[in-house]
Image (tube, rainbow, N blue to C red):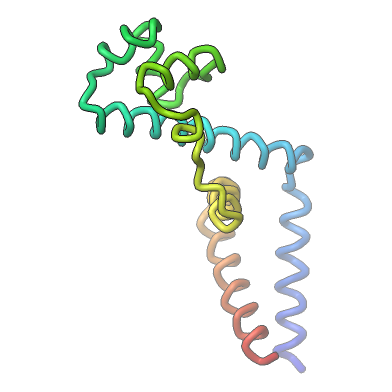
Length: 144
């Protein structure tokens, strides 16, 4: 009885803390995180294919008729890429656009990315509470 009461209090307090600090645009923040991940994947894919083709950054930039500084920023995911420039890169690499835009779009990986970003906002004390919550949830699920 006391154990259930403590669990109930713990969960209530954790939920209360989370709702008090919950950002207003939680859903839009999730979308921003996913867009950053897609931008990162696009840049990584361009770099990977360029290196597999044994092309330097300067060579690809010249062939695609874009600046090497811009291409470097795209590969580092610090710059958005336009469709026109993406098409130029695709043509210069002699590949399909899907080769670059092939993301790891599995639901689990997207959720893990979102969770990872959200956990960064918590201090150590709150992370320990979350860890206990997960352990208790696993035990409760195992009983069912």
